[in-house]
Amino acid sequence: MFRHVPNALTGGRLVLAVLFFSLLGFYQYQGRGDPMLLNLAFGVYCIALFTDFLDGYLARRWKVEGAFGRVVDPFVDKVLVLGSFIIFAGENFIIPDAEHHQMVVRTITGVAPWMVVLILARELLVTSFRGMSEGGGQQFGAAFSGKLKMVFQSVTILVILVYVNYFARSRGRSEEAIARHVRDFCIWATILVTVISGLLYVQRAVAMFRQSQIRGV
Image (cartoon, rainbow, N blue to C red; front, side, top):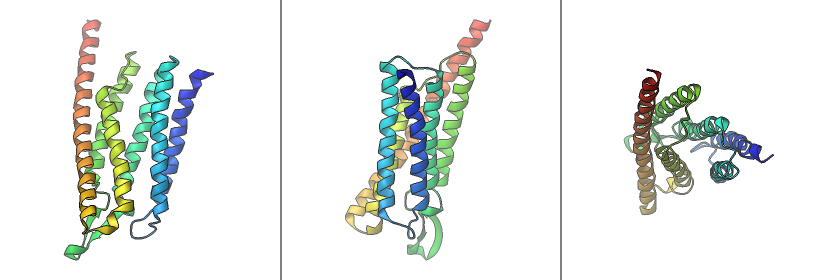
């Protein structure tokens, strides 16, 4: 009975991701900008983060870790994070550059499309390595750098939600400038950690493949 609880929590987190995306999708900066939508989204994401911690903790405590959890758990994490950044870089959060009296593609979230592409490329690369390793009978679970990357990404998503909901409309004030600097710092720190994490996974995968080739010889 207990062995199914962590997997059920993982599935529940996927449902929470759908709810989270629905809330973000209905929100529209300078349009359908009801603050309650982002407040609810913030709460849903926090619950999803808690279930992410809880399913891993229970799996280790009850010794029910398996291939399903190693594959599906990071998959759900990727859906939640990538979906968030894709929406943040999308049309619902695009604003005109009023200072230059022209339409410049900028987002109130501070997330640019190229950032999403970089994060996506890293996740696809690691997923490919994990699939190849699991298919060859080798475990390729999450490393510390991957977990640290997830922490940075999640904190950044929450910071962006707070900035958009409580500070973005006060542009020009000192508190808004401070909040914007915090938002930008979190975004760039996330990009840096994501790149470093990806490089470390590449190094790990290369080492594993070399070892398998040596054993094959």
